[in-house]
Structure formats: structure tokens, C-alpha cells
Length: 112
Length: 137
Image (cartoon, rainbow over all chains, first blue to last red; front, side, top):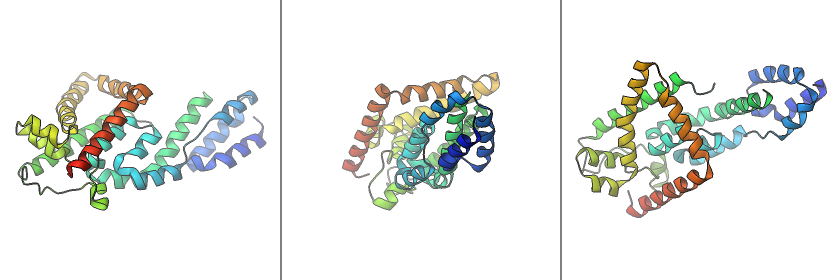
């Protein structure tokens, strides 16, 4: 794919991924065929900041876990009062990284 | 960093262990209603969360009072069955080197992501929450 397009993608979507993912994504996109660009454009990623806000406000109800797609763990968190209150606090710090990981898994699945 | 079998099993093992420890810790304070509250939602807002009272529900179940348990919080029944079934299934899976529990977990996840199961589940959880607030747990 065109280097300019790859740069554009990374500039607009860089905040959705961990910095070490970006190198991999750049390599994959550069090697990718040009006609996949439209598929790439339709992908929607979860914003890590939004998950952090949700986690801070509604972490006790495990809404943050449901939003990033961890339904099973979300139910566990909900049923245990947010892991006896501990899991809620742990997730305040983990949720942004987890969201970026989920985004990376999503783009990997789309690029296969 | 997708959820792998061993990670999920370790998590479940630790979860069940912490749950059992918590129940043993709370065993004596049953009926005294002075159990330690770790629930952040309740401590911060004063409003009980959907799963508040589930410790008391499980304790009631251990003492054999099923109706009392449901009246505290129906989530208690679910949690008790999980606490009984999960460790057994986990150990069976580990000894047989199979991953049936792992597959079951993902099957439940995909089921619950469908609207026809998700909406009733959310409605039930919300109804339970409203009941909890009404009961003033």
C-alpha cells in the first residue's frame, strides 16, 4: 500500500493502539494490497479514553468490560461487586491498555 | 494478548479461591448484618449495586435457607452454583488436558452477545438492582 496512505492511517488511528503495535501495523499495511484500503476505512475502533471514563464512572457495574467485549469477565465482575471492589480499582489502570489490545486484535482479524 | 486457556483457568482458580476465602471470613458474621462492605458503588454513593447482598445470599444458602437466600439476592444462587461447578470442571479439564471449560466460556460469551439473550439478561440485572435499592441492602 501507498506509504502516504499508511502514514495517514497511523496518524488518524494511532491513539487506538499501543506504540509497539504501530510498527507491526505499519509493516502489515505497507505489504498489503491497495484494494483493502476501503475495508480498513470501515473499521471502527474503541477509544481508550472513553473506556477509562466508563471505567471510572461505571466500573462497579462492569460496563467497561462489556464495552470492550469481555462479556464473560464482565459478568464475573458484576456478580462479585466489582471483584470485592478490588477489580474495579485494578481496571482503572488496565482498561486503556486492554482497549488498545482489543483494537489490535480487531485490526489483525480484518487484515488476515 | 488474547485470553488463553491457561490464563482463564488461572483466573478462575484464583477467583474461586478468593470467593471461598471471603465466604469463610464472613461465615461468623452471618445474620449479624455487620459484614465488611468492599463494594465501591455502595461505599461511594450509598446506593447498593446489583450484586450487593450476594455474600449474605450465599451464606444463607450454606445455612440451608433457600428462600431467605433468594430474598437477599438471587445472584447468590448463581454464584453458589458457579463456586461449586467451576473448581470441579477446572480440575477435570486440567487432569484430562482438555479445554471443554474454555470452549464453554466462549460459547456463553458469543451467546450473550446476541441481542435475544443480552436484552433479557440486562433487564433481569436491572430489575434485580431496582429490587436491591428498594430493599435497602
